[in-house]
Image 1 (cartoon, one colour):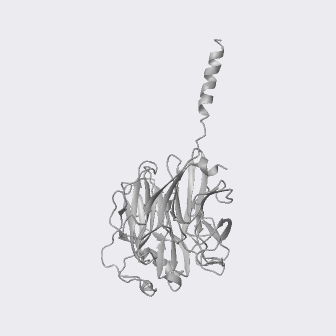
Image 2 (cartoon, one colour):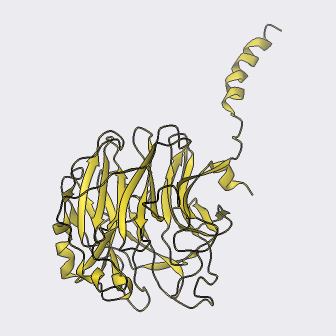
Image 3 (spheres, one colour):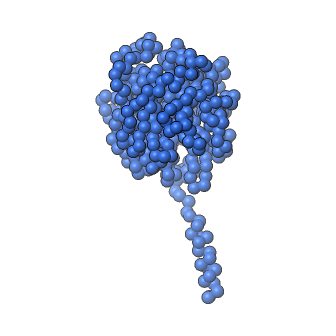
Length: 399
């Protein structure tokens, strides 16, 4: 017996090291719902990010009038308990007068020239604790502000529209937008924010369009325009809302919405996130109903994966019969998982069985996955609420 005790003692750490597998869980709650505030009749363009201190910030466009050119405020909610409970929503952007309307908007039928359109907010969580924020005004001016206290307070917005001037040599844009969704910080410290640019001469003054990035190497103090990443061609039609992720080899991968007849997401990569973009390609595993998507890295407990979310659907939308290059029904938001840096997506899990639209993804320090997306009872471009789903990797990988 005396000789057995040391053996038991030696085995004990090995037994304790085998932790029981976590139980799969999925929880949902609505963070913004139509009817909560009579000043807003549409909540759209959801975004979510986790700060260096672990706070979760969720934001959106709160619209009065519904359309892209309507009266729009940017609202933010905060969580400090892994996304379980949330602060009340509050407006976080305000630009001093004057705020002239984009002349290309005034030409769009039904646009009220007196409406003030704040649009396409993008937040980036810096490893130093700063939260960087870019947003647009009237799809023609871009502003930068920052928070040093996890979104409680924000600096005065500084206009950075001149950063986009170099793009005019490649594309004569008149309408522009950042993101939307969250931006990223590379291992080098560089901040990368996808953008799209349009001549404003097509539908809703948002088409035709191309995608690119702007970057900062000094913590948001200055920004620089990159190169056009996905041009507008016969194959890659009107590339626009774009998400980004850094790959394990340091390259930046853009995942791009478009109106291409292939109805697949467009992917391109760059060594520095700004220049030398690879020839764009369609990812056959990622359906494109023509809707914003979410993309984030899951890096927890020794596993490094990519997660992607969007409406996994190509059935006809409000237009009825599906047509190549035309919007499909925004429903069945699903989350996909890649174990090989986006080469394949073997896991596809339905998150919302029914109408569901734009989405964004984040991962908390505890490894909880957050998907923030538009949902509703009937098909629409945005949904009746912006819903947060909290779930773990076990739920995502479960059969």
